[in-house]
Amino acid sequence: MRRRVTVRRLLSVLFLSSFTFCLWLGQLTATSTPVNLGQVEVGQAANAQFSGPDQLVQQGVNAYRAGDYRSAIASWQTALEDYQGEGDRPNAAIVLENLARTTQQIGQSDQSIAYWQQVITMQQQAGELQQVGQLLTEQAQVYSSLGQHWQAIALLCNTPIASCTQPTAVGIARTYGDREGEAAALGSLGEAYRLRGDYDERSQFCK
Figure 1: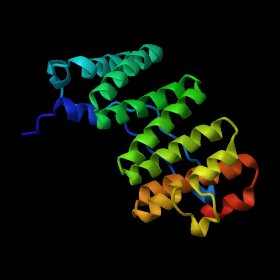
Figure 2: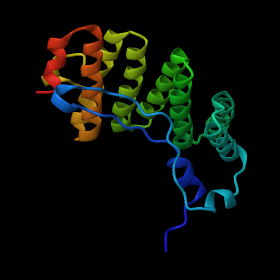
Figure 3: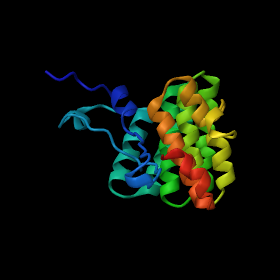
């Protein structure tokens, strides 16, 4: 029998991100995935009893599924304030990530960067450094989308590629043996160089 999905588990799996790295014949793209809603067993989400900020999160999920991104953002912003007031860092971090991705979807890139910075700072203070590396990659992608490629490169690897060090995304991923995180960061780095027109630099990532 499948294990019952709890409310907290539902909140924890609502949103995921993924990246691609080094495609056919060196064609490299690095993309952040839009908000991806988690899957639960039929009937369990409907039967779950939400209250307080959890209810606001679910309202945001419903609005997002309906394509009403601004209403989703409004619900999550209120939920974020409640979680922060309760000192609930894990769920506050999840909501911040959701806000960062969704505001970028509607073209509010500056606000997206600000949300990414909030969650990065939060996870740094909590000592969740491997997670910080992954978050830096997503923030860097937003900078690239704004044409601020040097800022993206600095977040991903501010030294020659062979010696990327912390606190950059590549350096953190290598420190923690996070192969997926490293691939995502390198993919984003190659894309940032490509967008700048630095094809020689980009060629280092897909040989």
